[in-house]
Length: 350
Length: 225
Image (cartoon, helix red, strand yellow):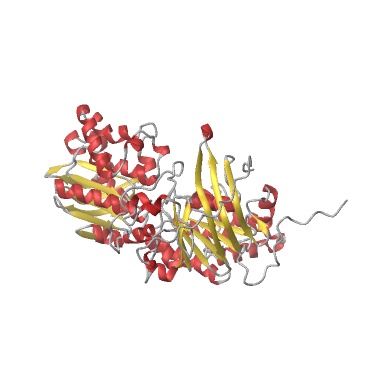
C-alpha cells in the first residue's frame, strides 16, 4: 500500500487567529428543466472567527438559506456548487457525504433549525432525543448518560423538569431551547442558526438571541441567517446583507445599525423600512433568481442607478456598488471583474 | 361600528381560549391588538371576522347583531369584512393562479363581470406584475403571495379589515409596502381596521390606537411562557 498523496490544497496549521469558517467565492446554482439555471448564491466570501456572530440578512428568497444548506452539504441533487468553504482544513463543498455525516454535522457544525417543532422527533421525549444525540456524538458511558442529559439541558437553559415531555407539549420558546440543546451537544466550534426566531414574539426573540449570544461569548462562532433586523442588531458583531444571491454589503454591526449606518442603497432601504425608522418600503420587488439582469441586480429599484450599473459591481471594501455613498457622486473606476469560479462540468450534489 | 362584547371562545368544550373579551372598532378607525404568542388574540380576530362562532358574548357589526358565523353569516355581513392571515401558504388555494386567487371572492358572490377590471386595478396597487399573476402559489415567494392575499381581501371593497399577524413572515420592506397598501385603501374608502400582532413598534406606528391583550380580556388566565 502506497502512502496517499497529500491533499491538493495544503492549509497551514490552524492558529488561534484563523477563522473557524472561511468562505471563498461560494456559488450555488440549480439546474432546472430545459437547461435553465437558477443562480441562488453567487460569489459569496466571508470569514467567521471564533467568538463572533455574523448575521446574514436579506429578504426571503434571496438565497441565504441555500448558503446554509451548502455549508451542511444538504443541497438537493440538482444543485451545483463552486468556490470553497473551509471549516478548519476541510472544504465543506468538496467533502463527501461520509465525511460530512460522520465528522462535520453535529460535531463541527451545530444546526439551530428554523422550526424546532418540525426538527424534533414528534414521537420521542426531549430527554430521549438528547440521550441519543449524546450517545452518538460523545460516546458517553451508559452509566453517565443521565447526568450528561441533565448537563446538556442545562447548557441551553432547558428546564430539566420538562425532559420527559414530547415536542408538542412544549411552548415555542421551550421547543427552541430543546433544539438549541441538541445543536450544542457535539460542542461544535461553528453554530449555524437558520431563521431561529421566525414566528416567535418579541420577548421570545430577545430570549432566544440572548441565549445564542451567550454561546458565542463562550467561544462558538455563529452564523445566523435571518430576515429579522431587530434580532440581528441585538446579537451580531458583523452584518452581511444579501440581495438576489450576492452579498452586497459586509459591515460592522455597530456602524451598520448606528452611525454612519448602512452604505449599500439596498441595505439603507431595508433599514429605512423598519417601523421604528421611516417605515417606507423600497419600490418594486427583488428580481427572480432564474432571470437576473446582467448588471447590478438592485439597479431597477435604486434611486442612484446610472449607466455604470449595467455592469456587475465588484465587491470591494465591504460593499458591492458602483456609487458607494461615501465616495462622492463619481462612479468607481471600472475594473475588470475577476473571472468567477467556474462550476465543475457535471458535478451534482450527493 | 365593529363591537365585540363579553366574547368567550375556544375550540374545546369547557376550555375557552378567550374569556370575556371586549373590543370596539369605530368606522374608519385602526386598532392594533397586542398580545404574546398563544394568548388567544388570533381566535378573537377570527370571531371578529365572522370565521369562528364564540361560545358566549355578542358581536355587533354596523348596528346589526351577528347571528351566524362562517357560511351561516348573511352575505351582506360576510362581504363587509376582508381578512388577511399570517401564513399566505395556508390561506391560498394551491391550484389557483394568483389572478384567480384575487378574483375568487367576486366569482363567489356572483360579480364575475367585475373580475378583469378589479384584478387589474388591485394587482397594480399591491405591485404584482402580469408575469406573477399567471403563477400558482408554489411559484412565488411568501411576500408575493401575501401581496395577492391582501388584494383578495380588498377585492370586494370591505368596510372592515381584519389582519391577523399579516406581516409576521415578511421582511421589513415588504411589511412597509403592505401596510402602505392597507392605509391607502382605508383613507380612500374609510374602512375600519383591526390588526393583531405581537410587534409593539409596528402596531404603534401603524394604528390610531393600540390595546393590550390584558386590557381586552382582563379575566384571561396568565399565559405560559
